[in-house]
Length: 241
Image (cartoon, rainbow, N blue to C red; front, side, top):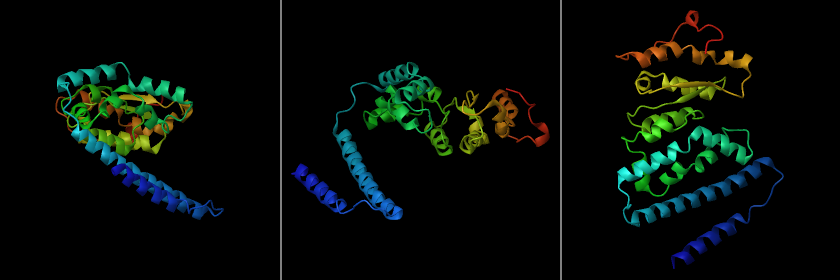
């Protein structure tokens, strides 16, 4: 009965969408495309809800949390995100790493493991776990993505990687990490040059490098006090790495 119900619903919606026809008017075409996208989003939400309900009905995982944590850690250590991205981007035939980010993470084994069910995902994202937050690559995270990672990792030390470039998004991510409440959580900080930026253009990312000395002091200070942004007169010398 349920299969007939959903089949009839899908047939009805597809029939309505069948009334939409290609248009030479750009605005009308956008409206029609948006209507189809809305239907896709609605169906995806329905499927997600059904899959979530199915997971609830499954028996409890046979593996205890301690065992699953070792499995996750093994997968993460044997498939470093940075290396995985490089291989995946080449395999997918794209040179735009940012655009391919979601696809790259979809094929990482440890990400697939967290998608098995909610119970597994909860164990993977548990506050005490060190494997995830010590290996996840933040080199391409957006400002919102970095905030989400800081939230999900609770108070666990993190090892972010920041790309030195002129991209406003990446500079904003750097600013998020400079906030006093986040600095104390940095286990290490890696700053790399963006391969897309010509060496002579790296001076455009100097606003980021202005704060490096403060970060180093913060990481070695026994009593963190936050960040003081240096003045223009205290910029790092040109060519400093």
